[in-house]
Image 1 (cartoon, rainbow, N blue to C red):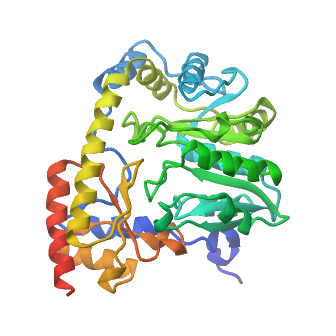
Image 2 (image 1 turned 90 degrees about the vertical axis):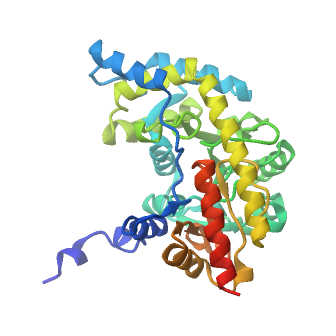
Length: 388
């Protein structure tokens, strides 16, 4: 007789657990650890946003909403996206999801037929490959390089396209490298996408955290809106990770199919979280600007500190991660991260969990206080010096 484990889905059984989670679990078992591993703001959600949630409960907003989400929130998101030269019909081309993660999942499940290939510029957020596999696709990594600022180029993309290629997942500003893409970069990518009739899932959750220049969405370029699903949410820019309010924007023909999956699995996002998100979008700009300024200060501090320690580090121009090169230490990413955690009491994430080309790097989140970053840099310095 087969065991319970053997009777479970082989697709799920063969998925590796998150490489990030292993280091969180290790760090949680230790005392006095400074964490540069967590990819979430250290700020508390602004008071006015929390207050809006309280008031919504007082007023009895405890019911379901439309599958698409509150109309007034979708209208606010549509107005917000106009800042990026994007126009979406809030009633037909937007759906509120449980964070950006659900939006990526239902986007892939809507687009993928078994065996289709999903192109993923790497290093990449750890969920893209597993979500593509769960949707029945074959993930195909597209290696980006530090000496090219981890940008995706048209040449790199062309090299990995096959007749089975169907979807390209973009994530810029990028987790884990902090890379951004210029409008010229994206125009070159768009040309390849159109030429090969690909869809794009554009994860723009870090759009507001762009420190040099202004974020450009590929969906805003000619011929791209009709083949792009834009994914974003409130988590990063408004310090609302735990609220799990995200959204997807896409042409009605695509979005209406995505909503079928959403309504059969999630139904709708919690109404009180949607009320809070509405307040953030309408009145949270001052707090958001303050947080972005603080992240930018921390970015400069950690990059300067890592370089002074002797670790090469490209200039991250977005998100809140530095991705230093640790190959000069002679250790692998896993060895460096584990050694730094055990002997230096600093938690970082090994770069190889973001794809094979991340080997030789580690991800350091600077979404923590200046004091913590300074103390972490001192400990990293001692650890690196001990290796010589």
